Image (cartoon, chains in turn green, cyan):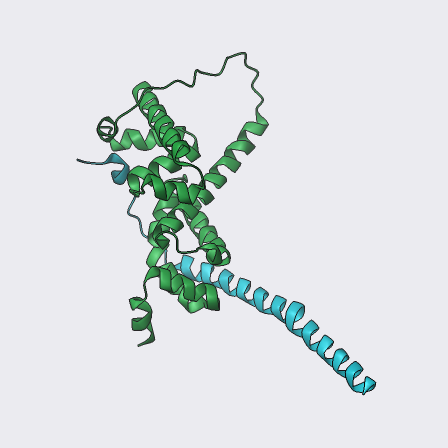
Length: 189
Length: 60
């Protein structure tokens, strides 16, 4: 009976109840609803199943502490995806930083010109998924995150603005830059 | 139109034992909250109530 009532609660109602009561049983219900989605998102940022499970574990534990910061301005799923992405991006960047720390490369190479051509969505959708997956491992994880938000989770520019807390032009510029980089790397592979 | 970004999303199932690991840690966090509440809010509140109560009754 109690579980039937729980199942009828919307995601947002459930989250507000957990935030108010810290109830572990309610959190277990939230885990059941989202664990596979979060796991598959984490899997996209990790190299193995074990690493993805560790990330999923850490995301849910951190989520329990941070659940109060969800204000209901967007759908909970949208908020959770961005929470997961941010966690994964931080994890990957921390690991990359550690690797780079060990090797110091001296270079005179001047940074590549930041100019890039506009890539339309139709040509982006023509890319082969296997090769695209490989390219996404090569670009900056923050750029990967914004592309996944827009094209995998169908988040609007406004939703991305809200979760990343940046302006509209910044979001559009980041998406444009990330798309250009993906296409460039794709052609080079 | 097919979207390769949706195709790269895996459809794997998370292992069953992860839930108990998560809920154990959540339980531990909850316990920490309860202790923090007890020792930082309730006990000091009670002690100050006792002392202030004693001071007020002594003044009377």
